[in-house]
Image (tube, rainbow, N blue to C red):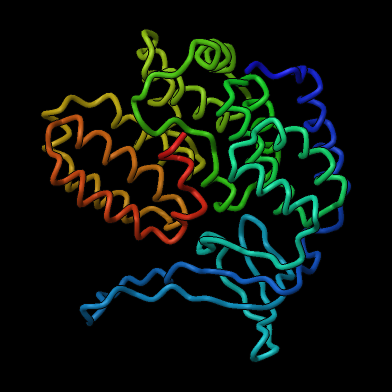
Length: 310
């Protein structure tokens, strides 16, 4: 059934987002009762064990979380601990308001109209900046799921005006498989393919890759693969795998798996789904099955399962 919501009304949260990200309280606003999952620390030394490094879990107050650092006052030790922001896999805050809980429930139930209508009110409650960013990226996903490409890309464009934690990057509405997309999304993507925001260009290129205009998407991804922003460059290089022939896929699969394993853990979900899709299309169902097992064990699978089930 067609939605009665006007696109102009859905774009209003973008303006509200700009106001709040520029004027809201500092990034260190305390969030009480949060549970934080951290990827294992990087180590140049070989692990002398058969077991994988353990994901760390903390419960306490988040007193800072931005693109560089996460700082937590641990509930048990009552001491502050600080880690590189790129290690954050997920943060579950216990201080969610009723509006925020409804917003998240609407997303999980794929009630995307409710998500887009609910963004403005939930941002007006002034959650910490990192949660404003994450909530807005969730709305960008909802917009893309309902083929409102202009809204989705505009939300991402506004977000890309300031540094983002990788946990927010993980929710970029990138098309990770070669499943064909509806023409409205492709049209909106073509219109934003040359943009001031590299994240918008990355998403737009991914939407076009399965269309008859894939060559311009490949050209743009090759440009983005040389970006000074390491996350953008890494994701662009992975997206270029979608243009590989079945023969190239089967030759490269082990190398690609190694490439994915070197990405920050929070960014591995989309690339794993891309690889599984390519391997399956290349005629290796057993390898695809093994990759699916890997996907099922990705720590952020529960949150990001929408990537594989649009």
